[in-house]
Image 1: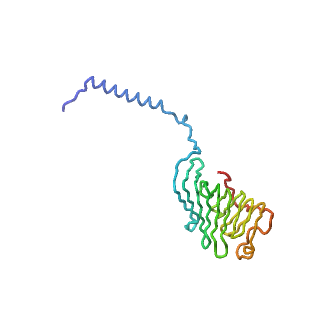
Image 2: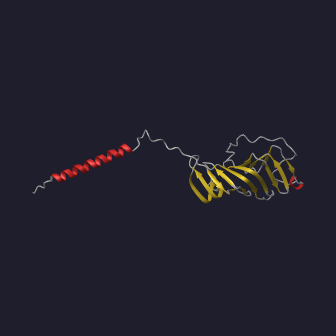
Image 3: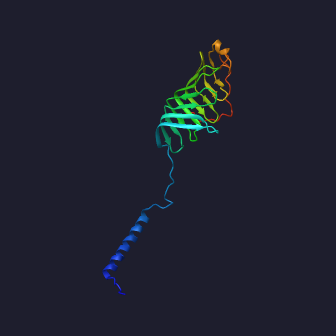
Length: 225
């Protein structure tokens, strides 16, 4: 078998290439920051994704749609996982009960989608039922507590129920019991037909009743966006 000899020139070329590779590796390792020099990434309140014509369905334990949130535009933030919404609409679906819809010009959704805050020209509408007329509430802020099925506000509110109108410094609406509780300085006009109607009693029987205290089991959510 013939033995192939390596020429001195080839050995020199191999040596030079090996030195270049070793030098390049050393230089790369020198320029890379060490683990101690790498500062941990801190999430900031900046958008990490967007969506248009968003629809989010929130299901009840039995798998039926309980709430549906629509928005023309949404922006999700990476630090607190909250979502800012433009022209949001929240619809509540309760078996054998009229639908409840809440809308506003802007809103926010918390990280676990349990609290929806609606701001600027916020409106809550309960469709008329067999025993109740339409109910419409107007305020600058409404907060929807999805898990508790409660809509509330700490802002002045104007409440229309049929032909009656009431004013208060705040409101709590329980979507399960259909009870409406006006808070603070409550006043307005209740029509006789509303007083004689069957079903849940009309909100406010006197011109200025004592302000009731909100139920203690209702968790506190964000009050400002």
